[in-house]
Image (cartoon, rainbow, N blue to C red; front, side, top):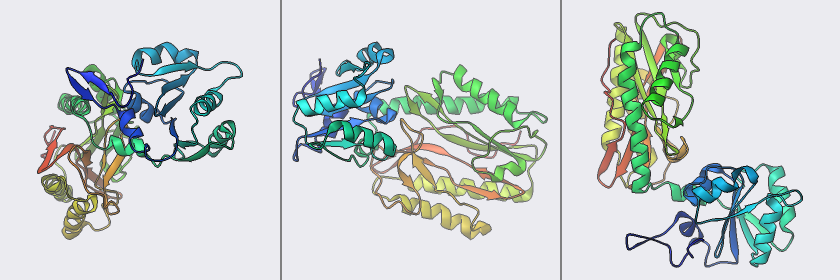
Length: 373
């Protein structure tokens, strides 16, 4: 039994407005509007717990998960505030969606046109009929997800603690002769052993000349003395991600790579110090880019400075030259400058940070100074 939007959910005497209610608040002044959610991350967020497949239908008066037999019991357990409608032969997701919308006199269904394929969108629109118009949802759930709740921050912080601890634990195991793939396996296993539910993304290990590849795939290259080794990895806890990168040296690095490391570390630290509510993503990105360029590495930092992190590993807003969005307190975002020298190697240093009114708090706490193994 779900609580109506006007009442909310009562916890310890305080009315808590749900994510679904906050979404519908945006549409109450217009026509009879409902929302269809297909993106699994948004389904999880708006139901506050459902991790299965299907479609979520939200209107002024209804909260419904449409799914098949495999997930009905799971949906009832994970999202007790939602009614569950089970599909069956001849009555699929789109037919049930149409039945719900037509019964409530819905005239406008907002859909995730950024997520659905053209074929899936057309099939849904065909099932709804001509009386109900389908319009883009325009990533409204993603906008709600930008500001993390205290509970979300707790989950992300725990995931970040695991990555930081895993980094410290893996250092003694790095040795000449082991392959990048072997190092990835050790690091992934360590995160699981420390309590990660799963990985936030495929772990990146880039050693020696492979360090110039920002998204290098760990392979059979063997680590050797003098290598810089970049490790980019993240854990998931309670469906929330962490993201961290550290670059270490296996034996004494070259003078050039020491300079690269010092440059990246300075750029990362100065941007972290400047990050706060009220700054735009472009402003913070420019600090790193101008400093790296001035140190003689113009054109060798080719990606954005950072991205928000949450249920998905890449969320909005970003720290990039094209992001003029003003940062708000509660955003969780990475700060990850890098320098990449083809044929030589590279360095990237990354923290996941919580934006505050007057600064930011790094949630990843592993040492950023150059570690020589």
